[in-house]
Image (cartoon, rainbow, N blue to C red; front, side):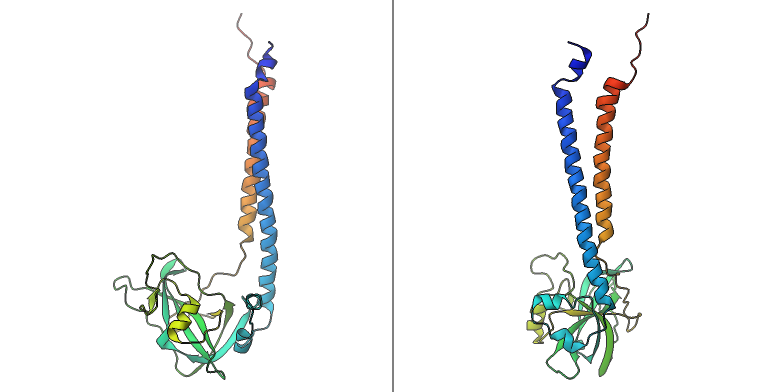
Length: 256
């Protein structure tokens, strides 16, 4: 049996199949990430288009009756006029802004001209007193009629909490999460199914340095680059160890 025949034994073919399988899997994952990036680019185009549209008012915010129509309003600019309901202010704990932990402060706003219409406004972020964790931050809430600008947003994102946590009905103002429907039933307010993220500079003891709206396109391109890079690495290692070192690299001549 020649040297080449010994080199092309079962182990050679097994390694070849494993390399081909690894390249196929990593290449397909890279293509999948590119398809996800294309979807996110389409979503980002929709978000950008909504942010460029004229601001809506409270009536337009309450008008949609279907989930699809409500979703079409998310990220739209909005201008509201109404009266704060500070007795129902809620402080969502463990929320960060500028890398600092604290509270997201949420207060219902009763819309002017429709006493039964109430919108929950995410007013901004306030730091927490870690010496007294039950102390609420000083937040100024103007009485009477107020005007504010913002953008339409879904309810605040949920954080992990243990069963029976402090977001239960009738708990303190400091909560981990807030369910919009449950909060409406708890307070007796006819809350709009969407919230408003108040924008503008820091005021009333609150920061409003909200994250830039983005669909996360760049991360999918990064993942695709990693998968395609891994695919190329598998091919390179296979060629080096299975072909170059076995068949093409000059062999050392035996001594005399």
